[in-house]
Image (cartoon, rainbow, N blue to C red; front, side, top):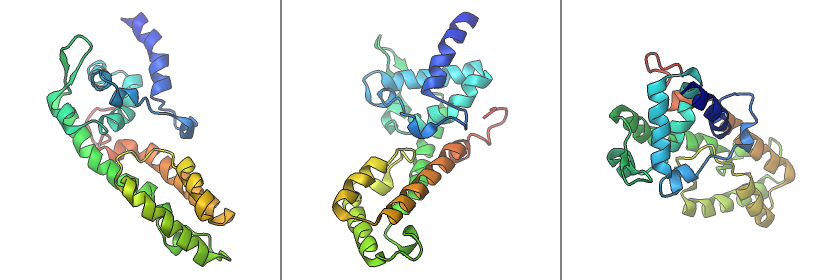
Length: 210
């Protein structure tokens, strides 16, 4: 077991980095664990293993594991998910509740992460010489975003830089305002990354080690 754990741990740490110095902005979540046929079962298995083994390395991954768990459907969280062999992987009831409640908390965190895109003067640089044009451009951009559940997402760590830059090719915020908005977006996502244990109520668990 010790050898298998030592061999598997580096790969898991690449998938679920926990070092706050890690350039996490370039992290791509393993979406196959949410979207593929047997992905949810694999994710639940990792959570169950981390809970049962209680090693510091696996416990430190729990915030990201529960972050992904919160993207699963309520049916999967309550009823379990099929493994490759057709059997069902289930979370412990307490952990299923963390994922279900965490979804609402992550939607709230997403509101914080996307506040910089809201059409208001505080979203623009102070003293912008084209404030009206930039405000109008941002309002139009956000009007399109409302059709995409932009502010109701439970995935606040997603990087919206490309989304913003693509639309700004059409609506033309000035460069200083565009850079200001994207910096605020990066800062908000960083705060969420660091604060995941609190957002998901993991830091209140006795002896959790998170």
